[in-house]
Image: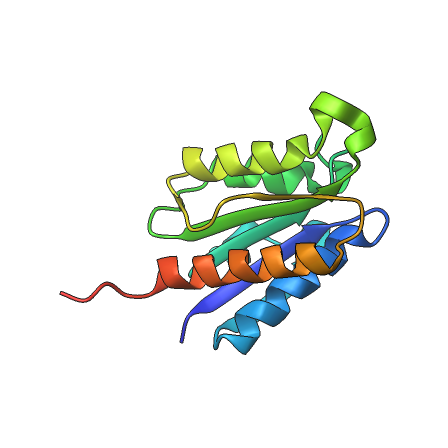
Length: 152
């Protein structure tokens, strides 16, 4: 069974909701799913899954969540070769060019660590609505397809 670990950082609850939607979709598709808050997650535990997902907010003008700085740094020093990753996040379009910059930063650190992008990153404005739920479900299904063992 494919194992997925979804980590979130939230200030308003929106990114926890994003993580919940992704977890539900992964679980319904047959994955074994674990969901944890970023500040309570060790990267070593995170690396035990086949699919790694981060759902995090962007603070102010493009800053990473303060409670996720250590996690981000640990990821940047990790070898995630063979892992499938995806990044999603909720932000506020009010911040213009800084909208959901954390999604881009986590996407880049996963690539730097050698992981394989399994789905296109998802950026949601504020709380997830029906169309966002559909997009996050597609995101989860893309991750699962990417994690399927390749037939010889």
